[in-house]
Length: 163
Ligand code: OFO
Image (spheres, rainbow, N blue to C red):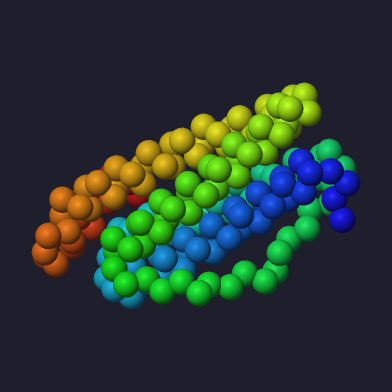
């Protein structure tokens, strides 16, 4: 399907962005139902951002004449049991995405494909920013997580900074 490793991995990245968009939307729904309104808004915003990241790769692949192949079989076997669990899983997901971006960037460098490497730089910086935000949220969540009332304070006051 893909003639070379780098195109295959770029397409894989496109699908990871799509997966993230859906994952965050599902998380947003969970938070909404559990009455964590700001967490829900934050995650929905992230979901929209991930779709934009997907579109950016989609456009790039078309521009370099590679047909994007979208995986339509996204399934979730993930259960969320707390807001802490949600943000832990979001952080783990971002770490995974970062690993993939670094992996493709490394191939691009080895192949001296500077056009792709330059394109991926935007994602490297973005991942750094996203991981940082989620790490801060997780660290603050630890502090607020001692009792149930505090989690709502976390949602109402702390998360409002990020939406
Ligand atoms: Fe697409 O920015 Fe993270 O995943």
